Image (cartoon, rainbow, N blue to C red; front, side, top):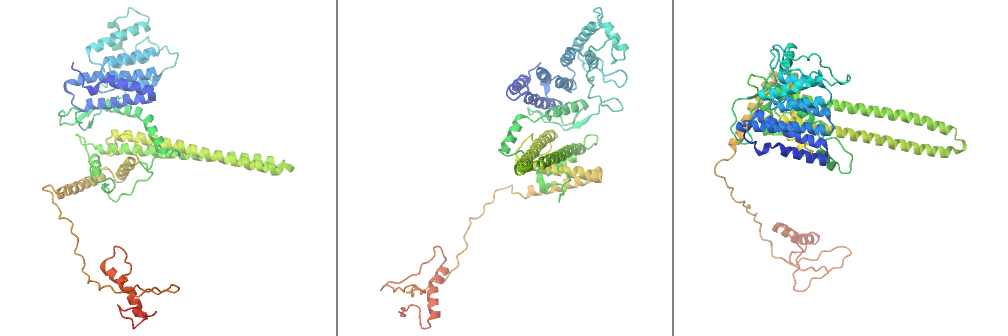
Length: 566
C-alpha cells in the first residue's frame, strides 16, 4: 500500500489537537479534529485520489479513533459515543473492522453488552432480516473474522458457556432473523441503559435503498483530472457531514471569543451588526441583487439557485431551506431574549412594590426620626435602581453573546454550503456587512419562492440570470483588449488676454476720518498694495479704485495729478 500524501498525515492533526488541548481546552482540540475530518472525508468522497485512496482511508480512520479517545480521556463518554457512531456511518471508513472493534469494546467497558451485541450484528449481518436489510457494514473477510471472534468471546462470557462455538453463534444469529437479540443475553446495568445506537443512515425510501443526492464534483488537491460525471453520495455521507457540523457549531472557539473581546474594548458587548437575517424580508429594487452585492456575487447566487441535479431536482431549494432554517434560528433567539427581558422587568416591578411597602411601613413608625428614615429610604431606592440597571445590562450582555454564537453557527453552516461571501467564522465588520447583504438576497429569494411557488420563482431567476450574463459579457467586450490607448498630455487652455494696465501714476492718499494725511515723498511714485496671486485685471481694478474714489468726490481731479487738497 502506498503512503498517503503529506497533507493527509493524521499524526500532524493529532499533535495539533494535543497542543490545543493543553493551551485552550478540550473544545479547541475537538474543533481541530472536526475541521480535518470534514475536509478529508469531503476530499475522498468528491475527489480522485487514485492509488492513494487506501492510505488516506487509514489516516482518516486514525483521526476518528483519536478523536474518540480525546473525548474518552476527557471523561466525555456521550461525546465519544457520538464520535464512534459518526465514524461507523462515515462513507469512507464506516466499513473498517477496527473502528467497529474499538466501538464495541468501548460500550462493553461501560457495562452495556446489549448495545455491544447490536453493534456486532450491524457490522456482521446488517440492520435486520428481509428485503429491507442493508447487509453487513463490514465486508472485508479478515475484518469479519476478527469481529466474529470478539463477538464469540463476549457471548461466552455473558452466557457463562466457554464451550459455545462460532458455528453455534452464527446459527443463533440466523435463527433470530439477523438482527434480533440473541436469547439469553441480559444487560448488566441494573436497569440503566442508553438508547441503542441506531444507524442514522437508515432513512431509506420505499424500496429499502438509501436516497442518493447529487453533489458537484470537487477538484483534486493535487491538480489531478476529476471525472466529468456528477459525483453521488448517499444518506450516510450527508449524515456524517451534518453530525460534524452540528458538533462544530456547539461552542465558539476561544480565538473567536478573543477577537470579539478585542472589538468590545472596555465597553459592554453588543449584538453583531448588521444581523444576517432580519424579521421581515428586505425590499429589493432588483430581484437579482446585483445592485446590492455586485454583478459577480449575484451571478454566483443565481447559478446556485437555478442549479439542478442529474435527475432534475432543484439544488437551489435545498439552499433556500437552509437559509430559512438560519432565519428561524435567529427568530427563535429573538423571541427568547424578549421573553427574558419581560420576565426580568416583571421581577423588578414586583421587587420594587415589595420594597416600597417595607419602606412605607418603616416610615410610618419613624416618629421624630422621620427625616433620617426618609434619607435612608432614598438611599435604598437608589441602590435598588442601580442593581436593577446592572441586571438589565447583564442580560443585554448575555444576549449579545448568544447572538454572536448564532452568527458563528450561521457562518459555519453557510460556509459549508459554499454560499458566496462566507469563508469561515469572522468578526470583521466589513465581512459581516457583506454577508448580511448576501443573506438579504437569500431571504428575499426563499420568501418569494414560498409566495409565488417554485416554478414561477425559478422562471424569474432564469431570466434574471440570462439578463445578468448578457450585462457581464457586454461589460467584458467593451473593455479594451488591444494596444493601450494613451491620452494626450493635459494642456492648459489659453489664458484670457487682458489689455495691459496703464502706467502706474501717483495716486492720492486715502482719506479716512480721524487719520492724519500723509504727503507723498518727492519723486517717488506710490503703488497700492496688491494681493498676491490676483490676475492682471483684478490688479488693474485694485490700482484704479483710489483714483475712481477721488474722481467721484472731486470732479476736478484728474488721474495722475497731485493731490492739492492740502
